Image (tube, rainbow, N blue to C red; front, side):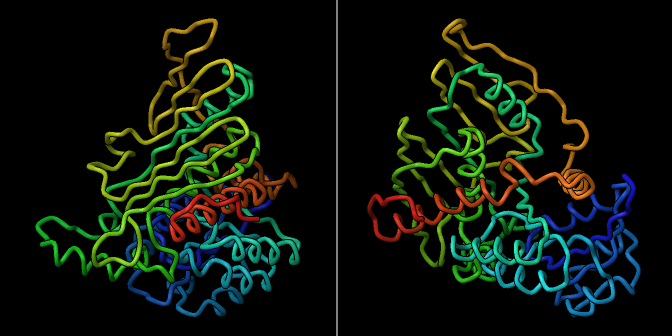
Length: 359
């Protein structure tokens, strides 16, 4: 690449920010020029680990943007704040990298898209599953026609729960755990909390990618109603497509985190095609396939990711360098379909009925 890109990180609300900044620091043509959060304390550990100098640490976003002058901003704010941040950041002329979920509603997703289009800048919605080689291999095999046109997607996703990512909950009483959850934005409705918003977006956005952009006709969703909490910790969504029914499950409270030890049910996808089936689970080194020509389940190896798709920073900078559009589940087009389905699921769960896809 011919240019070193200046990158700033805005908000440490989302626990993914430190990992993203580590990736920036390890990317040769990237320079981390600033980080912002209203709480300096939330930035201290990452700043120390990455040796970020004091003059690049900000508790005022205006000062961060004006002094750092980033080419690209990584946004890890609470989901319900994404649209507000996008509109503010667009005025500074930087490209925008939004950490999943896309938005708290379709209207807010459209505000993000419109802000970046008006500014003439690229928008990327980062779904970390896109960098899991097993899912990229699954998509390649689909595109090669191995199982025919995908007519059903069945997904299960989740983790032990977001508070376990930042807090040691060992030995907490039920009352202490409940209060810890209530203090986290992940469990606050107005901030875009809940397992449905956190994980359904993965399933339906990746599912839309696997199905080549196809949209469902109707959506039906049911969520749990945990006592004392404002949001769900579990959801099940059924989408009716012209080709059949697809199911998407989300869960905070799995026995283990899938990136460490696969829980049961396994986190991942089972894809049904017109001519076969394929299962791809988080972290696996193989996909499992059946076809009409070879109906016994057999394993095919997962191919490692190569440049420029080894990580999201490498990918987005490659697109900026070459002028290529952001594509696949990272694109506003596919991510918007995922948001349509998510909004429809929220409406369905609230009204306790099947609804048409929200437009």
